[in-house]
Image (cartoon, rainbow, N blue to C red; front, top):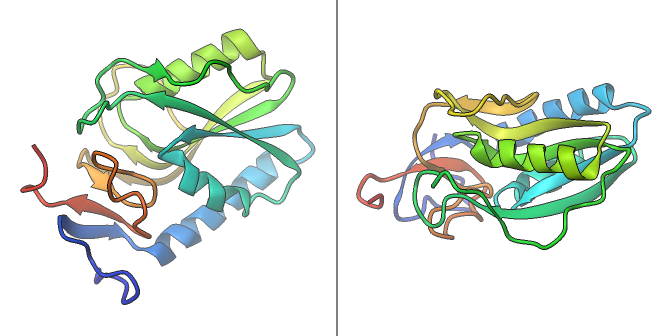
Length: 187
């Protein structure tokens, strides 16, 4: 797909996988499904920072229910292109979700370690009624932990992607599309 005229393809981005219009359409479909599934239930949407923030911002505007918003900050990539296997919680407390249904929102389901660790900690320490997962992207890989998202924007292969909240070393989060990096950029 050609880059948007208002946002040229930046140096280092190899190709666009999903343009802004395709993402917006799919986020609307996910919002409609979530609205139907949580109708009449106390819902708290928890964004996994920083990658899940952009997806969460667009998604909650498409969920037509009263809901609360929280966030949680963790690190697992530590500047690399693959999960380190260690999930570090970067804030002191956890969101208050006791007695509520929780929708964890993240940019990508990769190894699953990060979402598995967050879900386990929230379930054991915060006593929510349920925990569901919504991700913009789910990689088609064998995960070392048993976890699946109930709401998936797109499935992709194992390539490293950037844009729409996804980054490489802190850069590219602001792109309005999801694209792959040129092999020359990656280590």
